[in-house]
Length: 173
Length: 415
Image (cartoon, rainbow over all chains, first blue to last red; front, side, top):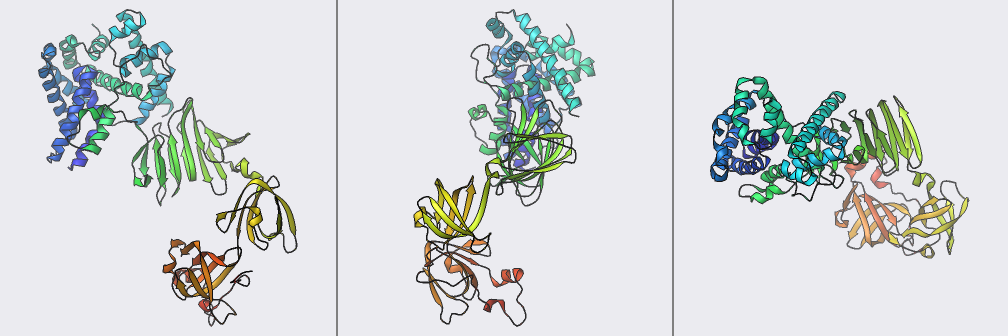
């Protein structure tokens, strides 16, 4: 596999890899940081002529190790490291059973259209969480709500978006 | 704690639920599937929010910069290579909006497989097929030029067809898709149709294979349905007419022309617009510089001449010699070659391609466009013998290269 081919495979599977990192960490900021490190790793390894037989599994392995490294380096988050290996095993099993499908640009478009249909307040909460990476406490403080209210509103918004996407998927065949 | 609550807390970064979540996932395949689906949904929701971040949605408070970096990371990986600084990954780059599924499509002269919204695309020398992010498809004729634009307000996508022909199958959806040309706009919700844009003639042809489209041209709105086809012309040029003629006389703001189309003796008196675009022998000029007898092509709009180009005679001759600033040519009835001075702006084309004067072969047949005063050659068009054979096969006993014609007597040395 050429350097270009390996790198392209990484690009093609970027969403799946990020999902995997997000699944492992539950923290978008951590997932982002580790994803960057993986990008550099991919380049370095492909320059060395690495030719993994199963690039997706190889990338997940790199992700897992980089995330473990990250947790070890972040002493403040030591508690998160506890049980990480066991958790990572079951996450790996889940992703091996249900590999994220290749990027479907139509799905992003449908989701964007669904976002447009959210009520302004719900949209603002979704943006605050997913665009601006605000935690629930920050959002609640800005709104003058309780954290639990924000959590419920966010959950409802996600559900509405999921249903909207499903409807659009059906309507567009 | 319910499965949903476990997933919610995990994806909010609550590490305390990890053990419980792992236990549930280990015991239940459906939970593992739900976990993967949720992580994927969280990913695309972040991407969608970052892509769509705009002033439309007022943030709760001035937030941190959006962190839609991973596409930029991916792109930067390809472009920059090992040793890139991590900060480069923070730059955001738009998602591809279209993908080439068949054929060759160029952007900035380079073949591309995907393109972002707003990228000017040119189809190669064979038809190509493109799919949009919403699943709509476009089949494009060779050399078509177009640009895809992503959502703007209630318009799902806009396809700007500069030239060429496209057959479109628009995925059904609640919002409109627009196909625009220089002439007008085709508005669709979901249908199959074709649009051909001819910028030179300022026309647009629309045919509908399935469904219904609304064509908007100027103030006109036309509905076309299954099997209907119609040509539209740019309203701005509807009243324009282009004609060829010979100048009889000029005066301040007026022009008398003997129209070639209307035959000998038919002289038309015309008023020239104050801001008319007048070009004589390839140079901007005023009406008073236009000598009688000049051959002109002029454009009339609302009974006013709005554009005029003037040139001299067109001569067909055999090239006897080439000098840096002149041509020696033989014409019918002339014993001695004529020396014709080349205009400094002379344009030379050999077999339809731009060329230099030194590339003209001795003995070749050339068409010479003279200046209005007959003194200078403004353009030289040469067809090489091989190319010439394709266009005109000489008759036996009458070699074409020896037959020299002109559409009138040359006037070397002045009128």
